[in-house]
Image (cartoon, rainbow, N blue to C red; front, side, top):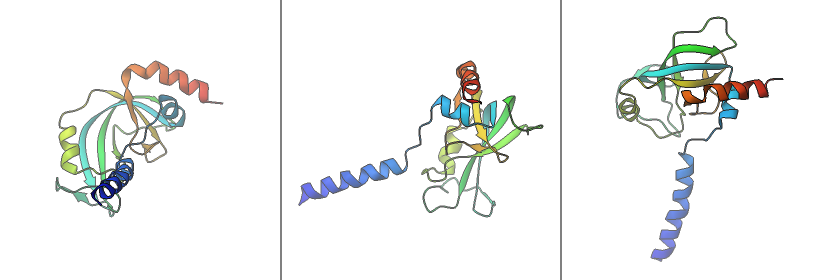
Length: 153
């Protein structure tokens, strides 16, 4: 009986682990899917509820069933390419809402401004192309631009 319970636990743990794993994205997918390619850095973190009211409790979290959204405040250092005539100096970019994060956990991870990175976003709301996947190392800048040229008709 114990062996069956252990096997069942391992089986269901695999589904739980997959449910909260971030999606992978290639540089090609991000480069070709982006309306906006920027250089930016994370300078802050906030959380809002379903009615867009701020949440300040570090224990508040996100995940399946939660209506909370954690957002990274990204300072735009350079606009490389965009479909917009005017671009804001900072953005509030939502993290994947089905990921299990607490506000305190993300604040601790971004306690200091990050190093500049490539940022790939889509649409007028400046959202990630793939939920939770929108940063890439700045050293891939030229490769990302080549990929964009290759995928554009």
